[in-house]
Structures are given as C-alpha cells and as structure tokens.
Image 1 (spheres, helix red, strand yellow):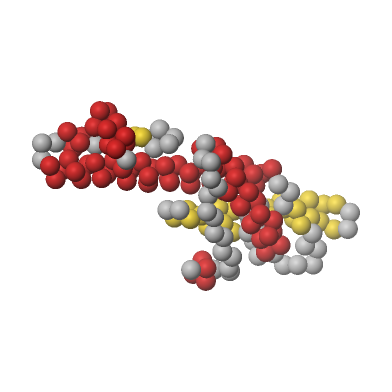
Image 2 (cartoon, helix red, strand yellow; image 1 turned 180 degrees about the vertical axis):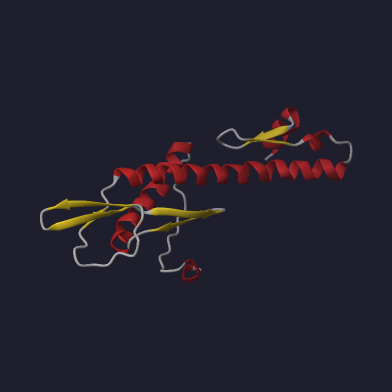
Length: 159
C-alpha cells in the first residue's frame, strides 16, 4: 500500500493492472484532509480498477470460449422459447439447433447469462474453467479466482 501511495504521489495518477489511469491531483494538496482522501482513493482505485479489468477480461475470454464450444442440441419435438442467437442446421434425423449462451448484463463483479436449459451444466463448467484458470493466468495471478455460479429461471430467484 505504501508503494501505491508513493508511486501515486510521484505520478499524480494510479493505474489498474491493464493500465487504465485515474488522475489524483489532490495527492499534492496542502490540505491534509484532501491529501489523505486522495491517498485512500489511490489505494482503492488500484483495487477497484483491477477488479474491473478482471471482469472485462473474463467477459471477453468467456465470449471467445463460447464461440469455440459446440452448442448444438437436438430439439426435434421441443418448443424452444427464442434461444437467440440461434442457427438451425438440417441433418439426419431432423434438425439441430445451436443455442449460444448470451450475455445479458454485467453488474460490478457479476455477469448474467441466458443459457438454454440443456446447456446449463456444460456452460457452468466452461465458466469455471475460464474464470478460475484462464483469467487469473492472463493477469499473472498465482491463485484462482473465487467463482460462485447460481442458476435460476429469473435473476431475482438467484439472490
């Protein structure tokens, strides 16, 4: 923490792990309260900024992983309620529908995906692999991220 404050006072900004900057001109203020607040903001900014970087990287890496997986399923006589984006492939024994998991939103350190019920378990495994192994490795972290996955028909049911 002292190194973060020292570097911030020298540069008048802090950087997240991916290099996003937050300028803190009050680090050289003669007003002790303003200077102390800027030092707290420097420490918090590095932590929060890096957390945001991790979530951005996780979403990008999850999207790449989604497009490399096979999401086909045979739903011959099932009514699929708009599994967008989808693609119907004709083949032997009827058609196959590709239902890609779809990112609906991100909220701070959470992501909300819409996933066809037949793909919940494979997607859960994919998320764990990406978020616990690939993302930390891409940041040079030596420990896996703590990932909690909840499943439900509605977002409110998962809280």
